Amino acid sequence: MTASAPRPMTGRQRILAALRREPVDRTPVCNPTSVATVELMDLVDAPFPDANRNPELMARLAATGYTELGFDSVMPVFSIIQESSALGCKIQWEQKDNWPTVRMREPIWRDADDVRVPNDFLTHPDTRCVLDAIGILRRELGEEVAIIGKTMGPWSLGYHCFGVETFLLMSLDDPGRTKLCLDRLKEATIRFGLAQIEAGADALTLPDHATGDLVSGEYYERFLKDLHAEFAERLPIPLILHICGRTVDRMGYIAETGMAAFHFDSKNTPDESMEAVRDRIALVGNINNPETLYARDPEAVRAEVFKNLAAGVQLVGPECAIPLQTAIENLVEIPRAVREWHASHAHPHAG
Image (tube, rainbow, N blue to C red; front, side, top):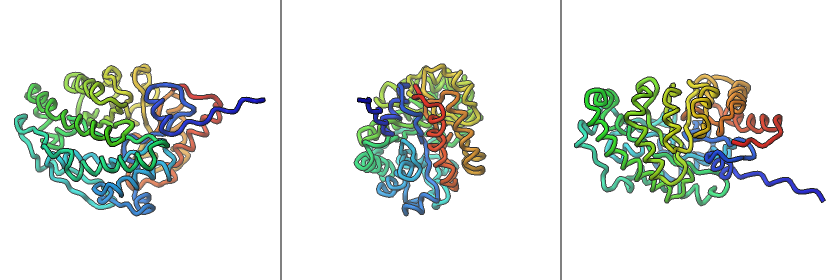
């Protein structure tokens, strides 16, 4: 009597195991940031800006990452402005072919003394929408795929609420006041994260835009490393830190925070990134958006997927929120290429 083959993991099991750097049946395909496109919006009648403000439409559009694209996770927070809206920032909501943005030329704060998280922060329509959408996804897909929420880090919120230039100048001129701002803003990050966990999130993306072109690795260590370690302690599910740009100079610091994973940009090669983190943290990424997913063909996508798999990257997916005009055929090539690579290597990938 022959032994039956082990049952394949669900997407949820695969993602959570990889975030713990445990063995998986194949490398999971993960979207810690948005994979929404205009084509998917039209397919399920859930267009921007409505899908950023209506929980049923938000959940419906997020589900396409699994139902149409074949990813192992869904992520319903397509923008980076939900918390900032609840904090009082003015929002430009745009139309379905563009993301909503914060009007950073109209800052709401000028000094650390201005920073406060409103009492209605979690009941504001734009934060409540995310919590309700996660609840819907948990009920409909919760056993099949990993539901990834998103809570913005305090550096990003500082940009939104003070303006990028003002906030960066403050960090140069008055580091102490900057740290006070970050310490006060972290409560928004934590409160929204805890609320998403209660709503049913399996993991959280934590974008904190100390990007390589604006902030050095030394700046990351000085201002954010300890805060990020605190988030890893206070938010009791896996956290996926996201920072755009060339970040290999801070990956060693990031690997020491206790975060489960780092979502890395294509400006960093898979090999050098794996070397920088030395298996202290999982990596997620890093398929190029503008040149590959948006502008090229499935063959180019497959080549980038293979490069990540060969380097041992634990979770594969786009490097950041994809361009809204990205073709579906390029996105479905990511899970197809992962399956093809594993079939050709014919052994389980051990994280």
